[in-house]
Image (cartoon, rainbow, N blue to C red; front, top):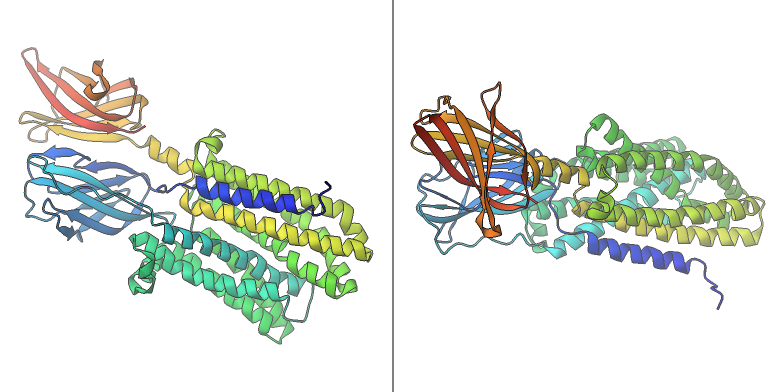
Length: 534
């Protein structure tokens, strides 16, 4: 049977893309924990004087708690940030048993992440258990919907107001859908601030009325985006209500520029290097989307309402959009190359899966745009009624596909880019081992399974450099059935001992022994455990 609705397949593909991407957007962190002191699962003889957490990128702490063996939680308010390491002063009266260090931080790109590490003093106890870092799906779903509404408001609303004032040259208030999108975007932007705070604090949706959630949201980098974007929406509303032509045009232009720039103030791309390239790329990407997508609804309205004005607007649109699409694609390629890094990450990461789904929808959208341009634009510009009706229907289908793209892109809020995962994977693992005669600071770079370099700084019990004749690393993993592997080291110019190209075959907790030959008659053995990532 012949398909009488050519847009049906496009809509079905778009909805399939939304569902698939929502399923692939796993609950993943954006700043990864790369080390802890005491290490996770460690048993220490005495209460530690300092607790530390190291991350793959700079973070700001939101919630720090220590759950004691009796189940009581103590807030940890005294800490120092040293680059990517958070040094925390624990309570002075810690007793024996198992303790849980629970943390929640916000990463540089504005996204929160939390977790827990366990250590025991003296010997492990039966309680407490580490709390699961579960996803709050109501908050997650509300954030996703708010982000879609924010995009719709920015691109259909602010972009639409700009098109009405500059492309269509309409003296009215603009199409009702454009005005509605603008107000929806303003509401979603303000609501996103509170939802961001809930996500940052790990609070449930019922806490949205708590002032602490809004303060927490404002304190993240996303807070700057909300402030600037809310101002942009207010200017767009002014551009629809003002009776001054100069005010309408000026306000719409500033709203477009401010709204596009707001997206460059937070998010994955804003935190990526080089900043001088990534932030402008985000701005250009958003600006060209707003000009292109914002013109769709006003153009369809003008074609239906006023044939002559609509045809002139269609001509201006046809000349402008190829340049916008070219810049949009160029900026998108720059962002994708930096964020994805390696082509294999398109299939192996959730972020890459989302990007592939977005590209598939964009191919569908560009195919429809090409058909419209070559088959309908010319006849519609000449005033052929049938072509105008078909073009308006095609614009409606394009708008639905664009909404599907927004829904897919909104899932990026919950998926760290491969470049961030690569940074986390490259972070070293480290361990401090000591005895009454010597101590060693051992670093494994990178801290994951595979080829690594192992280095150690050997000190005496008085923290003085210890002259050794020979140092050997011995690695084993009894649980995995890996017997001890001995690796000789070489003394480096900086005084450290290094073994290059050591292959650690699998992830997990490894036994690491450092054999320090002090003299022909004295051998000191330092032994500990180190966690190797996958």
